[in-house]
Length: 101
Ligand SMILES: [Zn+2]
Image 1 (cartoon, helix red, strand yellow):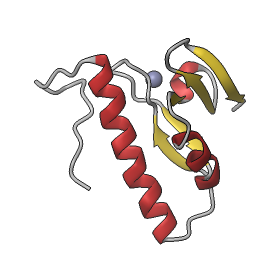
Image 2 (cartoon, rainbow, N blue to C red):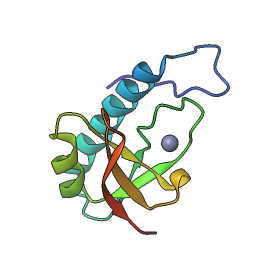
Image 3 (cartoon, rainbow, N blue to C red):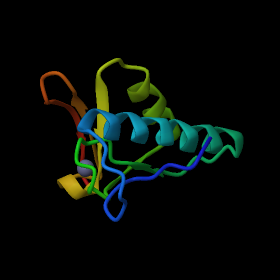
Image 4 (cartoon, rainbow, N blue to C red):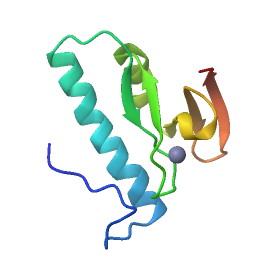
């Protein structure tokens, strides 16, 4: 996996869709590493919201992430949105799952 730049201080501005895609790519890399190391605790995944300046993390176990990541059109939201983690259906913005802190 490459280096990902996640916005904020950067001169690079991404569209909301690019922001979501880059973070999902990064999260897939994190998940891959976790699988390799058989890491079973909760992993801080990057918030996949459309706000490039968001620095939230969604803490999920790898099994939960695998389920979410294989659903087309779902993305995760992190602690900056008031939950340990939540899952959003992208098209409708409907909340699929909320995990309290
Ligand atoms: Zn966010």
